[in-house]
Image (cartoon, rainbow, N blue to C red; front, side, top):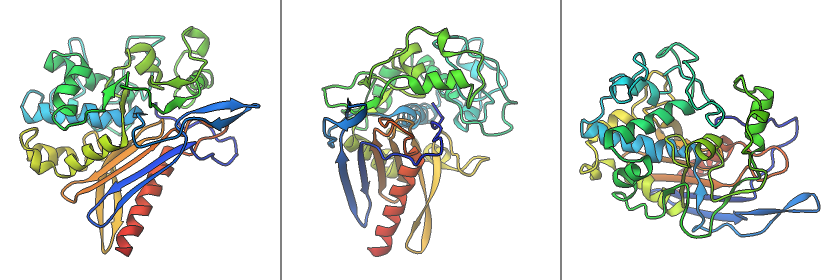
Length: 355
């Protein structure tokens, strides 16, 4: 999902629970505040279970990089996937004019979002492929299918073999996190229902009444994303992964030290994935952000997620950054995920100046 709920002119509410974490050569930051779940009290919301470092989080679109992009880095390194091959080379009856690279750059021209739980068939492209960046969940759903097709494994098993096990991410898994300590993802399915009923931001030809399976209770231990949960059994290329902050830091440090992991990917392939594409803010799968350090600007690669997580790393610089929150658990307008992420970047930049 790629939409922020309308604020309606009201100030955004902070998330009930928030973790900010950074591992850098000049400082370490770990701040844990608030609650991982909430409950209704007299028509409002109140905290219940505390947030901790062991809490599992719904990564939402962070799945796009931790799972799908990293799996493709390995498959491209092993020459099992060609970035410039058409999708039809891997998926029968798929698009001939769209390449793997196009999808990783969000230049495939596909619809940004489509309710696959109402209409399972992907619609024709909305835009001309290769012409401009249009961030698309559908593109990463197809990339996940390519990972499965090439490996011959269901996507969760493929990601386990290609990414999480080799990197020691023992608490990173699809759909059903181990244990009971999980941050609540959303109050219910209201955001997606509103998207359908208003036609904003994507004018799809359906309404919420066209689907009978909506969740009207808190979403806990399940992906908040409707396509991941309702249509794809919790396992998809665009969303569905759960993880903890320590695991996410471990992932980011591994990617920042990518040259030490040449048994997993060729360093030149990693550098190709990290490089800017036609849109400077977008690499292959990864978003690119500037981070002001003392006397220089470095590039952070990472990705945010709609539920309230974001990750980033700086290749070759031992910098790992993680935000984890349950920002959707508010009665009004939630704080945008990008605001939480850029707040961490500012904190890290200030610490670098004072180091």
